[in-house]
Length: 279
Length: 254
Image (cartoon, rainbow over all chains, first blue to last red; front, side, top):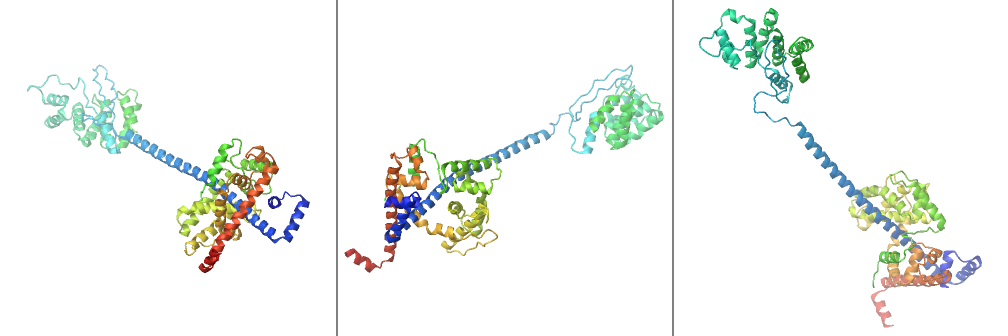
């Protein structure tokens, strides 16, 4: 009988056996009850099978989810770390160059071509400073490219001495970088010396060297107009620097371009370099 | 009463049988080669990079109790279930239980051929089941149901009701099965819980029975024993609950 109930419920009885079993059920309430109870247990076992299978799958699902979460967390940390490193590296690149002991900021001063028959002056080189804003940048450019002009023609014939003519003494002050004294002395020169374009050129250099840059352009423009100084080529260059310092950008650039395009100019390369730095 | 977990016994069995498949489920109406074909079909639809799985393939996979199909369904529906639990004001710890129970109800419905795919997609149906389960939890906690029925499918209560009502009975059955003793527990488990056919059990030598006749004969006796235990335990429980203290004393004297 036991065998028959399970076999009956499994549907594996042949037709005759099934009919026989069903006949027995029809006449036996106890058998009917037993079959109903067996059916219920089978149903419950099927529920248990499903619960067990789903439970196992859920276990795997949660384990995978946990791994995914940990991986996501790790990747986020990695990304944050990379971002931090990038920021640090980026900031280091932006840091300005360390300050130099010399007051004069350093740009690689272009070698100046010597005038014919004149001795060359030692070039001055220095590292390029950073210009945080436009005005400061122009100041730095000026400082980098402005070197008070000196040549043997300006060098005093004698050093010091009470016997020096005022103009000589003016040049002596200039030659020895005593620009303020030179400017003060210039005012005591006679009219003839004060209208000497060569001396005016030196005076303009003194003005530029002492920060009285707004006073230099009119002098240098006058020299150019007069066209009688032997420092004509240099005058254009220093005028361009004066315009730069005085923030007369357009005039400065125009003049620098003229100088840069002038194949005969001794300051051609200097002008090109300055224009490049100023870009 | 010694409680041995079903999973421990199952694991022990699996370890002792090298040739045994690790997981096997058969639908009531499918044959082995059909099962393999459906598994292959389902796997062909599953793309690990996340391509969509057709509802048809998913239903077939769920019918076969394929782990990948169940995982796929859980992955798809867990966020929605989590939202429902949160909106109901229930703690987040109940999310796995609600999800588990909802999947069980849906899979059982599919296996019983009671699921109509034209009504709604499996995931949508599952969300509807989850809402019923959450409402039941709220009732148990004597909280007013805050979960409003929205546009999700309003599923019939029958399957969920059967699931909820039979929970205690199934827990009892599990306990009885664990304590049935060997080889009865193994024979019942192999057929009813693991879904092995007799031919597979014999072929893979999962038991010491060499013929189908001997296997079925022993298993039938074990099954009948289980039924009797379940019935007697159930009636004993219900009898105790119904008797008055005076009636209990009277019976004791007899």
